[in-house]
Amino acid sequence: MGLETALRALLVSGSEKLQRVVRRVLSDLDIQVISCVDGETAIQKLTRERFEAVIVDFGDQASADQVIRGVQLAPGNKRAVVIALVDPEIAAGSAFARGAHFVLHKNSSIERTKSSFRAVRALMKRERRRNQRVPVEISVRCIWPGKAELACQSSDLGEGGMALRLPKSLPASGAVQLSFFVPQAFDEIKAGAEVAWRNPQGLVGVRFTRISPEARQQLKFWIDGITGEHAEEQDAPVPAELTDLSLHACYLKITAPFPLQTRLALAMRVGILDVRAEGTVRVVHPETGMGVEFVQKTEDDQAKVTAFLQALRSDSSRAPQIFVEPEEMDLENTPKSDVDRIQADPLLALFVRRDELSPTEFLNELLSQRGGAPIASIPVTASPVLL
Image (cartoon, rainbow, N blue to C red; front, side, top):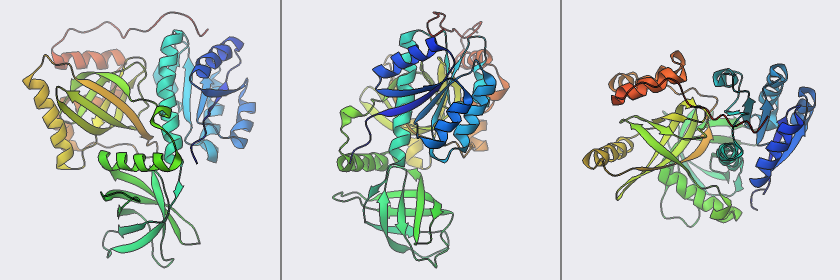
């Protein structure tokens, strides 16, 4: 009952050389590549087949726009990760504005391209795993705002949500609090959720919107045991270099940053202190780094980051270790920061201003906050390999 072994990517490019290089890189990562040379053919494939990723050559922008619209309209591929391959003179922001999630430069070296696609693969796997559902009947306690607690049974369960059997007379909608035990577990899982769909048979699908890192890990462990997916089949968390940290945000130096609005699990260690936190990507600079706002729903969440800050300040000689792992791309909801948090946190305030600044201006603002000297421009690799 495990996951399919082969991830599938659709590559749209009229360049035979580019196709060969992408195939070479992705074959090493166990990603199957299906190629086509034009938008029309790509649209046909998107309506008939399922892909975890769609790779688009932005050398033909009309075709690229056509393909991205096709991804957004194809029911089976709405959650596919869109990767734009761009020429060095094309600003990454234009590709993001057109709907790309990752932007890779065609002049990047093979090793840098492979490193970037490892991050892509991790997100591809996470998105597929979140859509997977395990049939299971367990007791679930539900509380809708203003209503009495209701006990019901589940129909299936996954990392991203579950299906519940509810009375047809119940006007199930909006937010709901859930409490349940997975089989053979001792700790109860509590999660905030929202109703995503309902069918005439009385099944209601809910999507988890708030779940602690510990509960999420427990759920993953149980699903892995049921599906038979071993740890070695999963991508390891991606290492990153912490360059800036505040109570509500951090900036991470990383070759292949994850897309805007990606929810991340962060493992942060300094000395003997090991902290797990969650965050949302708020700023992306391809091949440079990303800004992450911490998701702090409880006082305990904020206390973890506070303890980490204090540990760094008490012994600045210790280099922190940071590992990040994607949880999901929340493309439907634009994150909104609390006004008080923004006003009290210069780093988070800088993230909010990201659209006003060029990448170089943004990084110079970061350096200014640290008291460093400005830089002339962001370095870009210049070894022409892809084209």
